[in-house]
Length: 261
Ligand code: MG
Image (cartoon, rainbow, N blue to C red; front, side, top):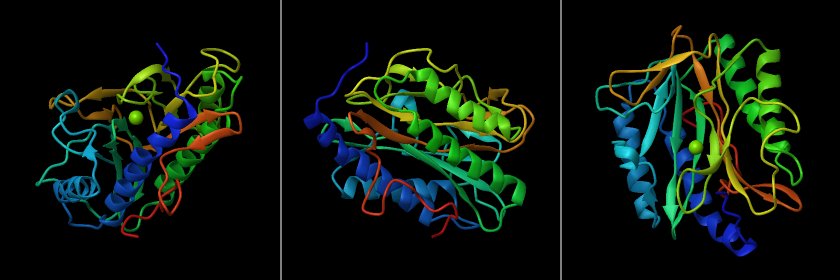
């Protein structure tokens, strides 16, 4: 069942969206070679709590961290660890959210760790552009397939893979609501977008194959070929005036690509 939100509810949601973006921005600012993913996770958790939120991911389905931290070939759900350190040339995706006043924020960004190869930077830039292309389609009267098609078309035109098993989603008082928001699809197909829907759009795009598997830890999803994967996510409301990005703080809805800034 799709929960349609009133304008007042969308405005209320904004606090969760804003804190979620600030938390993501903080995670990115801490990126440097040699730091552990646990150190970043702890800092983000402290920041969210300090600002009156609770980390939405902590304990979700038993997830042990406040931030999913997925390095290189890890697509989603990397577990922060005191023994996993960032290395020069890595890419790191943080997916994090804050719950504020009962609303759950959700956003993700892939950052560069130091100097990253041109090939991998290209993947990240196109994936970020895929998110933008998807958001542009999130207007009343369009369909979910228009979002998926825009993402898929752009990614595949660059020869990249589009992950199928993990998708965007409705979001609100719980992290995952109907509908699913796939990163592939056909124009004009799927659920019709209506004013008052809040959805997280989150392309997960791979340098090589989009085929993937879950590591023995039961969480972390990696590409089958070990090549890099990028992931950008914003939560938006469908409004009469078009898509309104709710995961934005004072600096806006986007983060720098370069970590440590
Ligand atoms: Mg999400």
